[in-house]
Length: 338
Ligand code: SAH
Image (cartoon, rainbow, N blue to C red; front, side):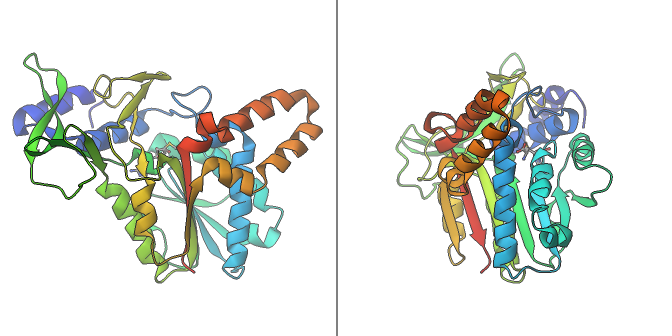
């Protein structure tokens, strides 16, 4: 793909007409993650595992608990989707060393589209840790049991947007203005079955997220395992436009830097939670989840071992868990096959 994605998009739109927000997001995200190593304190945005090690440690505890729940198999697939800089997996592996049988049973698989990110992930794990990469979840082996982690992965998957108007529905699309710049517009669309949306309001649908979660659900019929999805999003039926872009650490208009900015929407956990009906599943907040896993105790332990870092550790832990920071905006969805 051209490094000047804006020009490519303009040509596509000129030749074939406006494109859906989902296609725009897919092209912008693929370009962005291929050309930028975006995450971390020095990147465009930062994520929970980069903020405080307690996040990855709690995920590591969760992995051990679920490995035990599934009968301590001699081998299992430890799969992370969208692993970023590899910090989360490095923290998980460091934590599960506490149970050597669990560590030696773990076969690490990553689902990652970006070659630049793959290189970072390899560095984070070091030469001795074997791991395999996949472009998609489809090629991750279907046995032995699967323990899957996805932090801030679903938000990057493409989303369609639809608006209810006085006389029907319209799709929110990306087209060209008279002077040839990318602009949002509306195209008439067949009626949609969302009675909770009033005229003038938007709804976001993500077939890509549903397809990903349906894939996991189908696997769980034949492959034992557990999945942990963590992301910002709703736990009630969603309404509105949450498309957001971050360029050089600052919010920007979603169309102003295509392929140069991180572009995401909030995840509709309400629907994903329902999708997993029939399997044991729990939807909660990041605050409740981290505290429930013992995060507060781990914070105290880390602070007493490193008194000079008490303030930094406490502030970064607050960032992960406080109600007005990531604690409530971020949701955690756990699913098990059995
Ligand atoms: N989980 C990491 C990073 C989240 S950023 C963390 O918590 O720090 C999103 C990650 O998903 C990046 O590694 C990006 O390259 C990857 N990614 C984005 N879209 C993807 C797709 N469609 N398939 C696979 N990986 C994708």
